[in-house]
Length: 432
Image 1 (cartoon, one colour):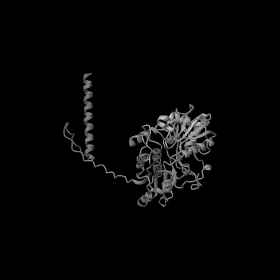
Image 2 (cartoon, helix red, strand yellow):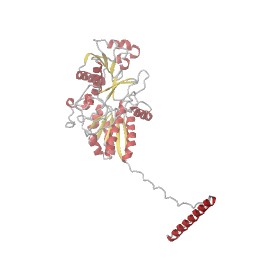
Image 3 (cartoon, one colour):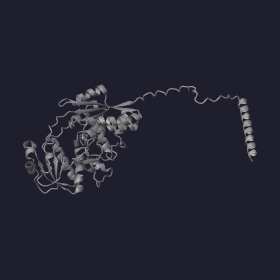
């Protein structure tokens, strides 16, 4: 057996040697050179250097310029050690809008620039705008100014081809008989705010309203919107009272003064119209009857506020607070939305063509997101941005209008503010 195993091993060795000889012959016949193996541990020859990566040329970005024009107004001194209204209200929102638009625009070769101009009280805002127009020919202008200034800009020859975004004037007349063809309203009108409030009161069955208004023009217009909205939704104003805080010492005698001012027929709620912010914050818990306070104070309808967090709004809130060092309010939000709308239109078109962007902004199919859980769009008959309105109590969102159950043939958001048959706007007639 041992001899047999040795014989088989020797045969296998001879066969392996023969196979190696055949392979060597084939290699020589084919002209293939054989290289001796490198000894283990020997240095390897240097590899050929690889070509450097190509230098990528920076992408040329096309610029869309957005101007911001603000009328600086005299702000009342705050009472009760409250923080004053910020001087950069609105502007910071527009700045955030540009930052957000640039974050998405760079992917389609676009960049956005914001060019702010602040006009001091008493200065001629139309003349200032004319200088801007002669120098830079703006096409998109965000305006943070009272109604009279907005109309002065819209009616100036320099605004012929300009799209103006109103981010602070809530006057209903700007969406009504005093509308302009190339003005888009981002801030809700007083009628929209009042309708949001009346929908909530109707839902709660608080149908009887005691209305208390201050003496200023803004107070009068807010009270007028409340009256109009109450009729629209079938609520009843049981009595109206005017309260002038300039003849009273609200700090020391609010209980006496406001208890007297809120006595009246039986009511479910006290509605306050105090845009001048002279007494409204002292009304809660100082009314003659234990009733909720709503309107400009108490539970307040607004486009935006600190408590808004749903639909990823907390992300927008955080970005704004990081930029501005404070909370975002309705004017800030409207400034952001105006710039965001221009950016969204440009990104959808993948173009910096200002004429094409303008056409899309006014197109009935254009929609833009706004962290409100709904696609937002501009009404064709008066240029108002359709949007939900929040009912805010300090620290909480009480409800969001339109309230469930209020229906409309087009969209429930058109239950807030002037509907097409109600608007006297003729500049945009023919658009739905």
